[in-house]
Image (tube, rainbow, N blue to C red; front, side, top):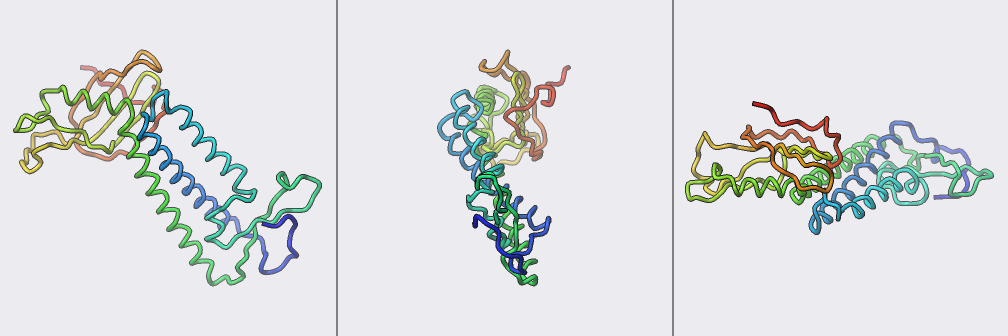
Length: 249
């Protein structure tokens, strides 16, 4: 990165809006991937929805925001710009260098290679997004809500295999929404005697949990069998009115 602009040339022509958007999308997916891996590491020590995780979890979010809003445009590495052969040039002015305006330019004058650059960037973004999704879903099994549901299943005599062993919850939640006083969990069931097929067995369970307020213990209000279906709805700070309520009757 240079502190003053280069002379106008083909090698430093301004980057198109599409290329800048793709570069930002790559960096966003990288941040999501790294952030999700950090949350996964935190979940190995404390529940993600517990008070103990509030500080490290907040630090992850703050660092991600600082990078995307400021550091990415002030000298920190950018995988998106690297893949698309872009560079930031500072516009000379009266402002200090860390506040000065920057212009994104192309450093590869060969237009024939730009299509491959965009393709590689999209592939990298997709790979990072997959890593982020896998890490985030894996970290949810440590939440207090998930642990409460697991204890409920262990004590439920209806979910016993032929040998008397209780079914286990899959470590990967199909949906998990947590609010201040309400939570919703949908997760598959792993049966100890999986080789013995039984069409009447539940494939998955959905749990409706409630508590008096933040910091109080969760209680399973209702659990019921449902078909295995990956809905992909996740959230640790969801408004209670956006979380499914237990049906009545």
